[in-house]
Image: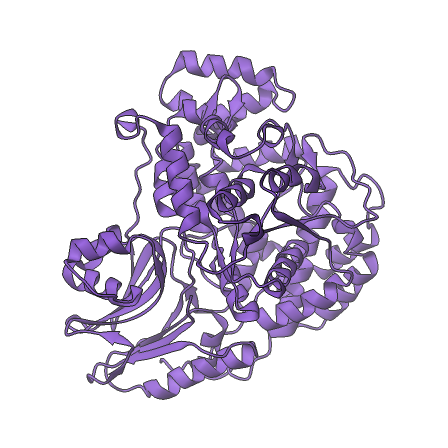
Length: 619
């Protein structure tokens, strides 16, 4: 996993060396741990600097290819080319069609000598980050967003902050700085003197037509693909570390790693746990401490299982983290234990961590969202069977059955109102000023849910971007963080599952339950409850700390433009001391207010930058 920086000009008028040096300076100033990265520049004059190139193109790549043998065979290559050289050879032979040949985690920049275009590409699941700026005379790119700010004219983006607080994802993935963008997941950005154009290179099948013909034994196909996905991400050094919760996803990854390892000592499993003095409020169907159920997996394989308790001084850590990574920490408790796992894993000698972030969309896909697939397919007998089975379950009501069945056809704004009525969660966020909330109302009216569960998952893939987290693991701890549940081959396999593999006779995640029976204990597979992350948020975020953070926001022009600080102050004055398990209380305080305070901290730390007031070096 590499760190990339680069720049291109279109009229030979830019000082590309100075631009690259400026970006590199942004890396070094942002994080003292940054030591090495790959840098390149491509000029219309013909001068260039890049590690790999041929007579057609130059490339800079952050990549791990998982089908090297297949690619080399298709290109009639021999020897031991690097992943970057393989991608360059495939692109030179096939152009953009090469993206359908290569499989793995990648982000790369290609400068096409013939067309004089810069092409930026990311993999289908967005496992490697890549950001860019365009300025008319040229463009620049980087593995992280904040170094590009050092080129000038990129203050914090209040619109992006507001959209994040309103849970309005954008497939164009703007960053929290003006005019700095993330290359969208599964897309490529083509840049020349006329501007930037997006092309959607990943367009997976989402129908189940011919599934039975292509996968006559879906259980064996599932197991084989999961084994391959974990194997190619474990690395050659031991031990390998894993996240391990009480759910299917990380448990499946951990169990598979243990089965592939030569010895139990080769795997370290980490589980975050609540504070020792935490008395969990009752939340139907959820459990706050996942260690006991997770331990059934660790005990089955005899692997070392390590508890990760909360940090005692969460906000001391978050202040430093937010300052260093140059982005708001909307879920501070989760980031805290996530970072603790990295630190512990590195101390114990691990060079790789395996997670299961995307598992709900692939490995454990299924559940009541499949009601709409039965309806879409007009499988009336199947739909009736699942409705009858669903209402007999303790965790499902007829109201839930109807909502999940007809959700794709319900206008988004009405669906949001239903959600608020059922769960007591108001997504509008009263802490934002109306000028930032009103556009969200308009967008909600215009949006429509995808028509199938698979199409919904594709949309979520394009919005959820985990890559920066993984890059931070490399920078801070020298550890590579990979997610086998984001494997493109497995993802594309899962997107074609017919509804009876997602929900059958009331059994949620039907295929996953059957396929994982060879490696997960029955207690976990049959557990009727799910984990509840950050359930002890109120022990780590106090009323006094909230007031202190609000005081930092006052006087900051950006924070006062974005937030109604008086409304936030009133909410803090009414700090809850009971009913902490109530979803409405937890959402308003543990999610919305804490996220607003984190955004305010980000603005307090990053609103002033010496380069914000000067023009971009690319203009």
